[in-house]
Amino acid sequence: MICFKNIPWKKRIVQTIWILFGIGATVLFGAAIAKKSQKTCKAIQIEIVGAEQHMFLDEQDILAMINANGQVINKATTKTNLRNLEQLLEANSWIDHAELYFDNNQLLQVHIQERQPVARVFPIGGGSFYVDSMGMRLPLSDKISAKVPVFTNFPSDKPVLAHPDSLLLHGVVDLAKQILLDSFWMAQIQQVNIDPHSQFELIPLVGNHLVLLGAAENLPAKFKRLNAFYEQALVQQGINTYEKLDIRFSNQVVAIKRGTEKAIIDSALAKQRLLDLSVKAMPIPVELVPEPINPAPASAQDAPLKAKLVTKPAVKTPKPKAVLPVDKNKTKETTKPKENNKTNNNPLRTK
Image (tube, rainbow, N blue to C red):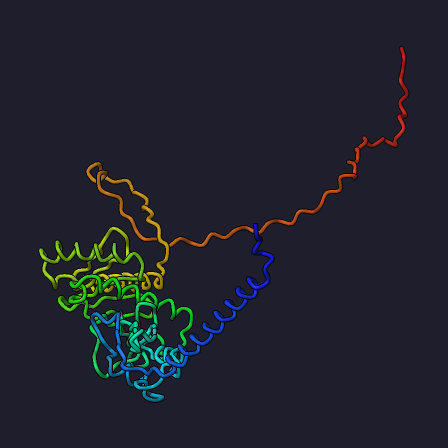
């Protein structure tokens, strides 16, 4: 039996085939590159998403930014730097994300993700700006005005906010999202005021009252209580009965009737003034002392005792007497009977 492995010409044939295959692949790859370099952009297709309610950018704005450095249509696809175009588009404040690519038909596909504002903020220093769902500040547009909740008296208008102001801005975003969820609150809340303590106050469109909301915490529960109060109390008592509605505390709505708050404050001030006057005028302590009763007829015994105001005399405390110290070691002197120096001249006589 013949062994083909020992035939040298077979190895040469295999090597030749592989060489021809490599040459052919290289030729085809070069031809493809040459053909692709001759392809030009035929058209641009733009798709803008995230603009369901407000479209601050249109196709003309996107085309103007793409063609800012030269026309892209009829330009070789290999000479179009898509990454630079994406960075140029994303530099716009209203564009969140941009994606560009050429399809098989040499059409430039442009996908734009537009930012959507959720609130309009008016700082104390003047001016205003929009803010999106991520807390990104957006400039105003000359084309359209967004119908979003309005917040007034924001403490800062600086591009870079301090930490407390940044937290407050996130509270603005959370509250604005809660209001946008319900069309009733969008129609009822005219504006949201920020007090000096960074607490939120709702100013309604219908009704002459103020809603104290407090911090942007537990918002669904707070709006649920406020809605229940509107459905029950205000319908029965009237929309203008109350001056303030406090929903800051859990499981309750504190309603203050019109004019009641001022009366309570005036009453408290009056009590404080009376207390101050009583402290300034210190009375002298007095004591009722009954007068001594003189003997009177039996008919006058039942008469009540007369009393008069007698001032208490100041009691003088006697001064303590000085006491000399006693020497304990000193013994008492014993007294002895005195001896009679006279001699007895009368001797005793014995019988």
